[in-house]
Length: 445
Image 1 (cartoon, helix red, strand yellow):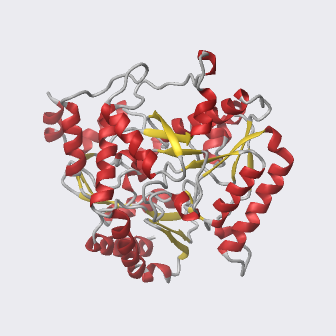
Image 2 (cartoon, rainbow, N blue to C red):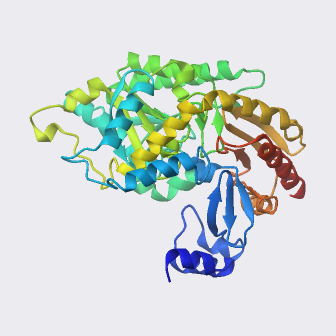
Image 3 (tube, rainbow, N blue to C red):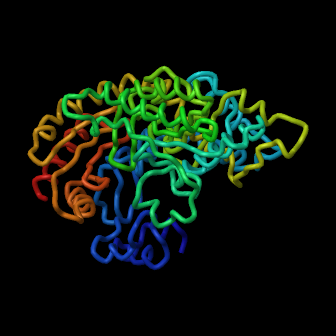
C-alpha cells in the first residue's frame, strides 16, 4: 500500500496506535497518551489542521512557532516543486548552489547591522551550538583561551543539545542532564513580571542590566559571550521585556569585549512586530541565530549570521584555523528555496504592516480575556500573546489542550501560561473564534 493510499484508508484510532507502536514523540511522557490520545493529522490548509475523521483545528501556536503563512501555502509549495526538479540537495563542502547563495545575500541585506556570512544547519539548537563554538574559537584564535564561559538570562531557553542546554535555564529540561553540561552564569531576567510594584518595564529592564554589568565587570576576562532571547523568552511562558535591555546589553558587551549572541530562533521574522526583535532596540548582535520561521515552517533550516571581523579571524591558509563544523544537510537547496519564497511573501504582501492591524484587532477583541477572573498578566508583543491562568490543577496544561480541541483550537500551555502565536494569515473571523473558544476553555476548567 502506498503512503497516499494509507492516508486515505486509515482510521483515526488505527493511525494513533501505529504511531504509539513506532514513534517516540518529542517533549512527551509517552504514558500520558493512555489518557490523552494523539491527534492524527492528515492535511492542512491555512490556519487549519484536519484529522483523519475530517475534524479541523485552528493552529493557534503555528505548529511549535514555525509556521508563518499557513499550511500548504501555494507560494512556498510552488517554490519547492520548482526546486525539486533541479537539485534537492548537494553537500556544501566544496560545492555551492543558487538557492543558498541567493538566500545568504538576501539575509545579509535585511539583517540588523553589517552581519555577513551565513553558516547553515537544520534546527535552532544546532544554530546555538554553532554560535557558541564560533565565539569561543574566535577568542582562542585571538590569543584569549580563557574566554571560554558563557552568560545567559534567567529563564532563557536555547535548545536541548548539550551546549545549548548548558546556556538554558529551564529546570525541567536541564536538571536531569546537569552532570553532562558546562557551567553557565544566568543573570536576572528583564521580564517585566519580575518588576516591583509600581516599577515600569523600562526601569526594571535597566535594573536587570545593572546585574549584567556587575557580573561582566568581574568576569569578562573568562567570558566569551552573552546569549539571550531578544524581547520574548519563549519556553518559560513568553516572558516579555523592554528593548532598553538590549541597548544596555550591547553597550556592556562592547565595553567588556564580550560577544552578544541574539537567539532569534523563535522571535525572528516578524514575531515581535518588527522583522527582527533586535530592530526595536536599534542594535546588531555579533551573532544572529535564526530558524523556525526562516523556511516558513516548511523544512528544517537554521542559520548563524556573524560579523565580518569574526569571519576574517578564521580565514587563513591553515586548515586548523578553519571552523571545522558540519551538518549533512547544511544549506539544503529545498529548504533554502522555501526560505526565499517566505521572504518573497514578506515583501510582496507588506506583512509587517498587515500584522500590526491584526494585532490591534486581536487586542481589541481580547477585552473579555483581560478581565476574566482567572486571567492575569495579559501581554502582547507583535504577533505573540500570553497570559497566566489561576488554577490548582497539576494537569492544567494537558487538560487545557484537550479542552481546546473541543473548541477547534490547538492550545499548548506552558505550565499555567496560555499563549497565542498564530500564523500571520489569520483572519478576523479566525481571531474571533480563537478568543471566544479560549473563553469557553477557561470557563470549562
